[in-house]
Length: 528
Image 1 (tube, rainbow, N blue to C red):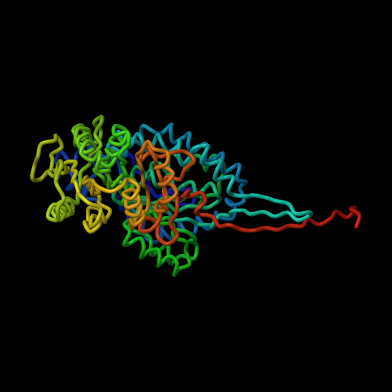
Image 2: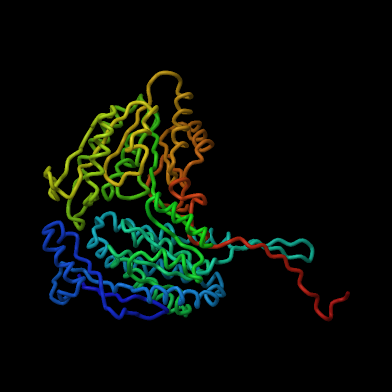
């Protein structure tokens, strides 16, 4: 693998700090194989006590660490570019978007390699990068968003237009667990005429900076976009600087719900628009007439990245008539889910740092009546049980009864580890009454990213769609976590999206609606 070094990209040029500090990416494989020497090497490289040129292939690259002056410079560059970029016709910006999507596919292999070095399983990384041009950057998505940008009607001589205009400078703070794919999704805000400042997370900056520098920036430069349309830099959290800046209009924030909702209040107080992508605690309902093979295939998506992804089915409600069979099939399917180095084919599990949190939730659930169905152990990279392994075994608990289920943390809260609760309502009574209880349970979830249903009955589908208002995305007999063209893949209600949460195309969320009425002046020769 080529060792890559990226300075900040500000105002269309490379910028370095006076200190010259960098953060280095030591491959996840090296850290798993030989933890302390690898972390010691990273520390020495970051402190300037070791030389990158002699570090060997365990180091994938480095990114310049931005200082306060560079943060301010990036905001000023974005503000300076905003008026000219907003005047570029929408059709031209959309064509730039198509070129970015094509270039993304052309750079798929090196980008996937960097994601793997940072710890993403290759199978997951390939799906993420291949899927973006087919989903958030797809022709269907871009065209639908473009249609929302302006609609014109006429009333006699009066021309009336409802149009969406760019907010201005958008700052993007992608999450560490999926920085690059979320940064690329957020970049569609460029296409509606905004300029962007992207912070590559300090923990995993390399793939994000590669995407900005090697995929997006060259397209913008070739198209003659104003310098400062895109700015990308790696650094410590920049939220305070963004809130204090007169240049910033919107902040796309990814993170936990508690901090995110506090940040929402700070944004409003600072007169910035908060666009929140917070925690998910998705609910999947498997009804008595579901295709269990398809349902199980969707449920196993929960274990991607060891459950450390927001848009996976975090809790399952299984009809009591099929619960035993569903669990049996799920456990059988889980036998193929194993740990491994991220570059190995078929691996989806990743190391979990929150093992204490995992065991605390598991112990609470078991103490209060849940039953351990499968898993619960630490594992080494080769799958051997261990007291010190980096991996957690895919784990399922059964919880009998809807009443009180949400008193358990494993159901109530978003978890970030591979512990899946299956809630089985009490048998007895009519299915209609039971479905009403299930729908109320789904709607009462404080989170609202995605919800899904598996059933073969058209009436059940319609009741579900008519009743479930919680969530930015509803899936019926479809992959819970899968991304689709045209439909927004992000956004949600409640603890997922805050007070303004909804399904979110960043291209539209970073604009505001403006009403325009025009009566054109008559020409001098026109009769009066």
